[in-house]
Image (cartoon, rainbow, N blue to C red; front, side, top):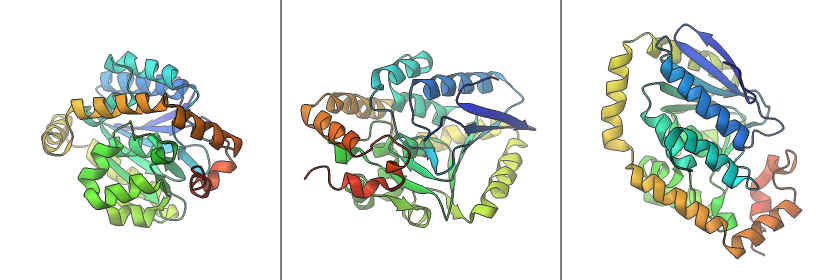
Amino acid sequence: MNFDTFKINSTGAVLVADIDAPPMNLLGPELVRDLVSLIRSAERDSSINALVFRSAVPDYFISHVDVTRIREYRDEAAKLTGEPSIALLFRYLSTSRLVSIAQVEGRARGAGSEFALACDMCFAARETAVFSQIEAAFGLVPGGGGVQHLTRLMGRSRALEVMLSAEDYDAETAEQYGWINRALPSDELGNFVNSLADRIARYPAAACAAIKDRVNAIALAPIEAFRRDSNLFGERAQDPNAQSLIRKAFEHGFQTRDAEIALAPMLGTLGH
């Protein structure tokens, strides 16, 4: 497998994909294109039972979508789902026969958080992981499944806190809220995820897929709910007020690596 935005290696039945789209792993058309190809290839390969997603870019897992290329990355998503929707692409991963694990070190904001939520499990570095749903600061709604996942995982009040505040949350708080499975020390995280993925991948794949299917029947929102959120994001992104807020954010360094290290304080000033 050759990709522009992933570094790939495999161990047994586990495929490890390091996201490598510097400087900050923006979710743009190239990354979406490679994600579509990766999922397709892995699903066709009966020797692969589990996927582990990590980052090769320091400080960032997936920063968020590239707001200057929304139509382009949506068109890439449609090549797998038949519809131009990141939400449906992420939901496809949730329903895949493959067991997926996100290993988060660095920032996972917006669609980065939603991608981690779409994976079957998420483990994060206690010292470096940061999670946020930033959409409200721009007059948008989370369009990649965040509303559906976070409300079910956290409950109504905490989901509203997270999504309406557009604040950064560290790994320990994310664990407490149910956003992720566990927060682990950085020097233990990789070994833990590798061991877990290897253990799961050794079990009969059909049984793992059946268990996922039954859990999804209880916990995963229907596809119509994801489709509605995706459409709302697209509609809100065209709103003049949202466009004004996005332009203001760019004036303050939005979508640049250094400015987004501490994004939340800047977002808190956009409406003033």
